[in-house]
Image 1 (cartoon, helix red, strand yellow):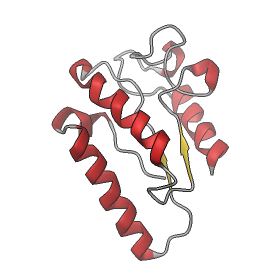
Image 2 (cartoon, helix red, strand yellow; image 1 turned 90 degrees about the horizontal axis):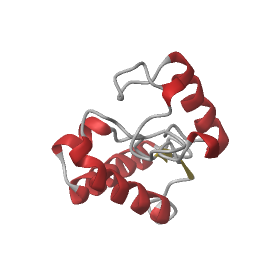
Image 3 (tube, helix red, strand yellow; image 1 turned 180 degrees about the horizontal axis):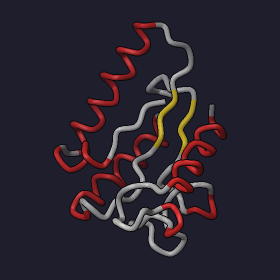
Image 4 (cartoon, one colour; image 1 turned 30 degrees about the vertical axis):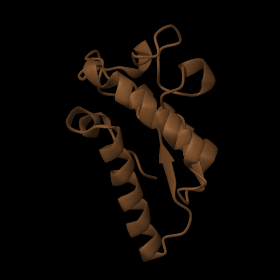
Length: 122
């Protein structure tokens, strides 16, 4: 399971995010690890200026995962009601129960939701 995260967004643009994911996939394919999955970057209050890149990267990943050689994608950026980690009313915020209170890090409940999300695609 591959996840490029919010910290990656803070320091990179869309092309760099795409290239980084492709590099990781190629490396894993060379290791013959079996099925490779990825998940979208969930919202994060720490880097609001990166939301446009996050949204573009997530849309690209969901549209191209088969071409990238991935077996599936968990949409961690989807609203909580749809199985993701985002707020049901604000796509740029974590679901309140999944947030430790800083808008960035997942609570224990959020970590369980993330694990359950992975299991839906793996």
